[in-house]
Length: 502
Image (cartoon, rainbow, N blue to C red; front, top):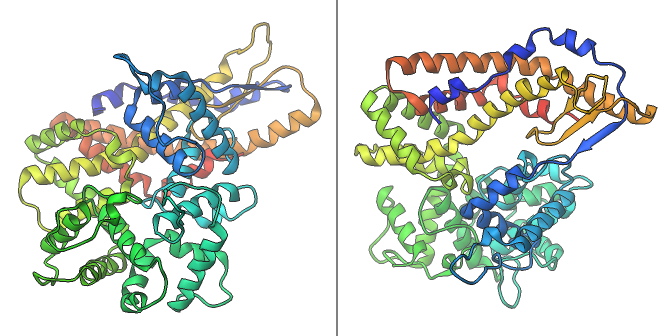
């Protein structure tokens, strides 16, 4: 998407004119009518083979699907996306996950569902544990806990499968608590939140493991070697090294300096690129310790905010030159959306930050690193733009149209975070139903005025970008960088709460 396309998209700002007048004309509403979500998003997912397979893998490992991969149709027209049975299984898995996570009114893989899946499955996105340790959300969190214990080697079964089996979670957590007590990381009367924090937050776990490295090696915990190698593999993956990901069997290969498996190659490259003090002949344990020392110091010394600011500024600086901006835009278009969707922003920042910190001068390499980072920055940017357009265009547009044949009433609308679930007011209702709707309706429209202010700021950003683009080829890189900084501003901070109003 280029700036010219953004400029041509409908904004719906004209619908704001006379807003209170329109709202005042809404007659006393009646019965609540739910309209099922469309299958547009699901059909689009079926056409994206990479995304389809990744979502399937996540639900399988979390225990919501019984097979590791979708069924295939034999023959020249084989297509996993066309098989109806796969679609049904995936929909049922999604529905159960939403129920376990206490997510409602979110449609097919909506923003709430995707963010929940990111938090519970990945090691990249922050997991807001306090939001999960509440009644109604524990079933989903429990599956996530068991899967994480398996990835780190603390819980195993006979076949060593990386999938939730609803067994050994409680005993695994007790073992994890005992391990943390052994390291004097938590008190005896520690609460569950603190125990889980070390399981989910590598900013705390990696420095702890390095500080107690020798003590861990001399302990009797059977999982100690798997844990240390597993954390190293994940840290290397978070910093952008290829061939690694949480839970891969390749992570269990023997590690050695200048070895030929992915874990050894990544550790060797880290030592070389960061000038780490490693001898030509070094033991596996010492190599892991050297790498963990680097990551522990990185976790403590460099914040994600620092990394993101450096990347954004690099994008801006590079985009000041017309030729460079065009080259960057071309490279961005070559990168698949999967580059950001499955890794997350944290991994993109760390990789690009490491490249820039090294003083990458070779133009092609810098272009490559920034293109990947921009692709990952695009999620909050494009998502925010489309949601704002939706609430202004579709959300207010409904006030001026009769939605049901024969109706004499103007109707109001309620949408969820993705604006894909609608509840309309018909012209007859029982008092209890009416009051329930009005409570939600009033809470939502208290946020409309804030959304209007945000929309005006957004419009100003777009105008600024268009003006700049008319004199140079700043294009997509600049607008992405500008939008991203905006999504981290105080003005934007309330937007999720506004959209999440019940």
